[in-house]
Length: 197
Image (cartoon, rainbow, N blue to C red; front, side):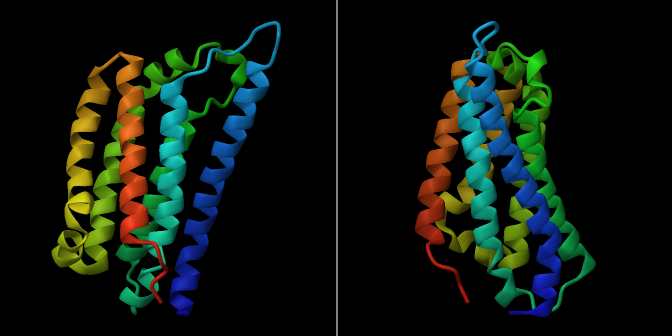
């Protein structure tokens, strides 16, 4: 394995690890607040579904980035910056979904709707960086080689963001999250079931 690849992925690993840790602590914090008898938390399917989606996205990001060991023999600062920014955006998505102070939150639906504009804006940034990451791995040939599920996902994300920014119906956000999870699972396990080395 390339020494450059190992060096570059250290910071990315830390950021993704912090994102996963934050997601897991968020789940345990929600369980703890939900089980409190004096002021239970109202849970949200939208928050839960999107947290699962971002968790899966982080796992698949980590899986897909291993391809860079074969693709990029020489790293530039721009390649490095893109990968670190991608990891940061995924961490930020988790941070927007998980309250920092559970005592100030009683209704996760209201919390999600309050943060939705930030969440979907960062989600769109993540989709753009994902396209840039795919382009870095092999240009338009690589992107088009992923098939319809691969190249249509970023296009569909534009629609998700447009609806998400406007809608205040929690069911709409939940359905979009479920569809996104299914898409990630089908695409992720169809296109990248093996590490390529």
